[in-house]
Length: 440
Ligand SMILES: [Fe+2]
Figure 1: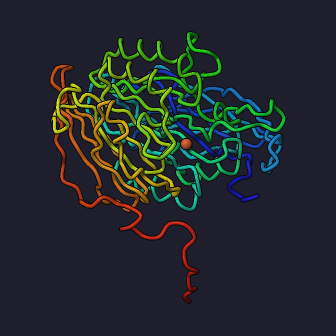
Figure 2: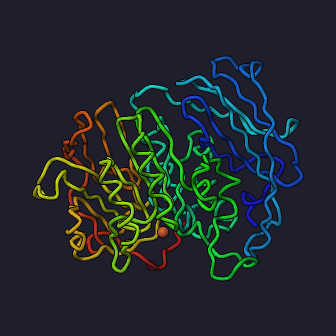
Figure 3: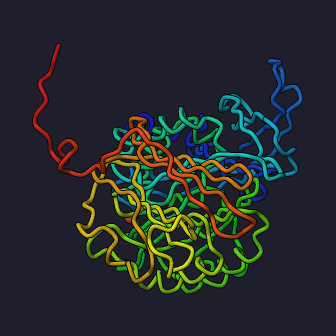
């Protein structure tokens, strides 16, 4: 077992999320060895003084033990997860918190900022699948994203965060790759197919939500949704935008009405919907037609602005024009659909692009193969700016949407660093490369 994989008395795998309003609350979860049976979180306003902690308040954590031993690949039998939700915080305010056992074993004090309770400008980061070799080959991507957008309101992960949802060591990689970024910036997490895996001690042929998902991410739940979808379908309102997370793995039909209502009542100017399986897949034999038949009419009805997805291990961005009768050169956009990938696993793009979806009215604008990406989305009143960066920081795709009082969105393409479309043919080899010489 790796040292960073082993749970100890010191808190680790600290994740920020929300169960309530991002302007006035924060949820924190962390992990310890099972001998820490009681845990606490402390919070204080962030000030310049070193003894800000004199003014801190303490809240007892909810502690649950998690049995890992049903999976042979897990090296620990049991660990404890702890969680606290702080409510009644001040909007647009920096706080410091720490988590620990109330005695000798504490995390450092970590700063975060609550959202504004108004429609103020903000940015967030969006990642497609990290999934494979998360520590060795994805860490650079989340670190580059943090360097590019250190004041991001949240980091959104569009599913397949790791490859084997029940494997503790892989979650250890995810937390080590992101380190204190995960404890400083709230995550909006989406379940992918790799977060649903069989369990050896349960019904054969059934896939179960990753054992760690609910203990390690505190997320909203709703009585009107089936319990099977708990903490996988939820929304947040963030400074004038509504971010809706769907679960594209199962029960599509049971999410339709909930989605429709959340979009109907959206108090913000922008609507962003995220789920794992793409509405318009970039790969052969990977179409998700049943999901498209159920969800696309709802997204169309409400003219959802952005749809953020993963799963295809290629980059694809395309739009639905305002009217299907409008020709494809239309400068007015109804919905922008994006499939992206942040980790190192790569697939091929269909040679025909998205032509197969032409009857749906969608137009493919930009694509890539064999490249890792992260995206920064910025919203400022009626203007949305989208930038897709390669893992090494080149701007690959960028546009701006200007919204006219909930009417059509005018798009303008922004200049980028890379003009060509990355393909296997014009990028480096993928797969097992030549043996590397060892230099002294
Ligand atoms: Fe996937």
